[in-house]
Image (spheres, rainbow, N blue to C red):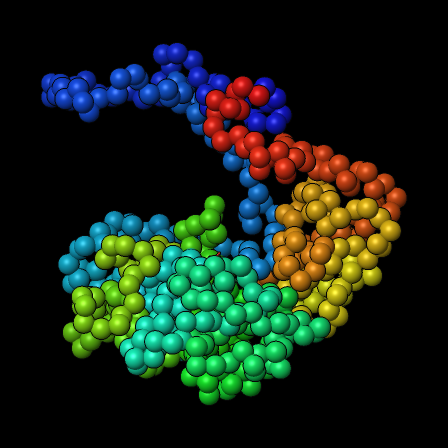
Length: 491
Ligand SMILES: *Cc1c(COP(=O)(O)O)cnc(C)c1O
């Protein structure tokens, strides 16, 4: 097997009889498990000494790439810096040592954190109240759509089974609608990349539950017609859902609630600096306007004269939406704590600079690179923008090749082949965290790759050359995936 390809597996380092533990002498006697509960054969586990285990995982972690390693312009994901103070607060024993079922009078401080974050998000977004229950953006979308469906059902309006979604939407929007049992009606974009109001009008009818919108949209463009769109949807009896994954550039500048949105989610792991680590733990709080508060999932933290209290679900009594994840627990608490720390660290005065800096950084990169990369929509962008591959269409170098070559130079690739509106899409989002020096370094490398594409295209097409794993065969990886150590050892 090729070590360069797979690194050493912990199983390869195994030596019979080695171990990394020593237990105190057993003073309690043995308890024999019933034979029907016992394995027939010992589990096949690697046998390694402690130092080997530590070295193995330390070396493996060096093959990872995160925001703490380098620039990570992954469009749509808002890979901003996760401040260390967030981690310090989240590691405090006063927070890590509590149990979710502790009596409420012993966890008043933690309930206050939850309550204050609900209030802070409401004030930032212009909605009335938030649930911190959902664990991700997609979780939030589903919860929000369930709230919209419940609202119509509570009014005896059972016909509204469809939801309007723009063709530029993130894939989770139609997926959430489908999981919620709603039918998807697609509205087209104009050549300028915004929702086409004329295309929308004929879609509205008494079967429409609502419309989902993202602003700025997935092309990084500000949707200018929202007041008109919200008016049309509301007049028709539908509700407006705001996909708040792109809230970053609007933070402290404009509020979805003021634009006419009724329900929204926020990605704490994007806008509020909590880690994205390996797909989680994320958090997707959902906010609603005042008359929709009764539909929010329970438990929900409230403030009373006697302190903080938790409203529990009343079974079968109303149209309250079910919790998106089970258990009586109130969201991903340590993530909530990190987001709250971030908001307090910035404060009201500084939070409004996040959006302008994120927007400035994105526009600076876009303008600096548009002579080498195809810019299909040449307009001022918000926090991110999309190129459609290299400008020089005579080269065979694709967006995929540019993305792989960036790895050689120590940069994470941008989001590629999304959104689907362009064939060679390359979506770049620098966030506000980066300095001009870092951004200039990225711009220089992007120019260099464009030059290589003209002069030594094969060097780019065969990249990456400097990473532990070279170019993987996408088709083979999909058709014959190597999913466990036995398969890897047999290669
Ligand atoms: C990231 C994102 C989502 C989904 O959020 P997850 O937390 O990944 O589930 C939805 N919409 C947009 C526009 C996004 O960028």
